[in-house]
Image (cartoon, rainbow over all chains, first blue to last red):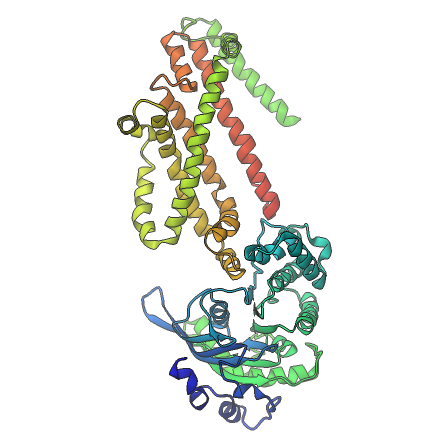
Length: 318
Length: 253
């Protein structure tokens, strides 16, 4: 292990307590009794220590996308990462999935450093990433086929997971014959069928209509209860994060840093429209305001400086 | 029905015009044959099996040559698409080589392989390899990145990644290139076959010229067109339709 990770607790750069105290201005955090901070990266299911990612812009200047990200996720925990667009939250998931190397820092799964992709961590994309040349069943089977699982066993597992996402009848359909919500459910079944320890979800429900999204929230929570997987869920929708997560992690706008972490102690099942969820969302959005402003300024770019008082006014989805 | 009627009208008119010109006897019959003269030549050619043999020999050659082109072209194209150095250097070379008619390779092929089938195969491969390579490179680039990501994420790597993910994912983008490669292969083959005693359709065509038998020449030309058209219409159209159904793409109007 590098010296970095050993010294971690003392030099944790974006630590939760001081930030929460100084930024939330006396407001009570949603919950205070949460032992995650004491976890070392080695003991965590997923441990990110000092992750940096920089890349070269087309103009040749070096840009820092992720700046010393530290995050420990316990086994079986549901963590949501929220941040304005352009904060690098999707990129972070790609790094954890091993699809792209970080510039520096270490990603540990059960204490072992990530070297490239592995089926212990499956990423679910916003545009589902299902294979249009395969049937629903063949898509779900794919990971097992790559592993060399015998056909009979593959079929059985496929059926099990298709039943879990209520798509047993569509085993023989092609992807284009399904609705958006159904596709996302196939993607979840395909991910689960490789029996990953960690599910990485990259704004999986962002493109769905509200009713379908509500339904999939319930289903995902049910699947999470049933399978006990660790889930890291990226979204720009604060309410969705609170609806689903045990903990919400805020990333700042460019370069992405862990701005603060909010444990969510509300009883489950929660609903998007619960007043308690809305209150918690408001608290996080207040925290996010500066970041959203920066993100918008970068987007408008041409000197128009929108001043936004709350995230809601910024069109930030509640 | 309406479409069939249009076809019938068009081709009857064409045949009529041809008959009229032949009957006017502006040119001697051995230079400008009548449609039924060509029909008789076709019938005679199939009767004495010479056309059957020629078709078999030519098809065999084009299948071998084109097959090699497809396999090589896919490997080359994939290599080009995934390596920036090759893409910049060899990519440009390949595009410029594409302007070279494949028969220009004939003298080299003769020296390298001698006057035999391998020389013909070489010309066929040089004719179609470039289109397949460039199509594959293009297809690999047009293919949404998410498929490669998802495949690697689910544990596919190396050959498995290519065979189960990259190849099927790029098929809709390379099918037109494969089709073009086929057309080039077929043309190159006939050209090369015309240049020596090759038994193929190209030689039968030249034989018609040597015998001053224009009916036979036109008969073989019709055969060459028909085979090219059937492969295009049956094999490639079928492939396109199959892909469209699977992917849910709407067929081009």
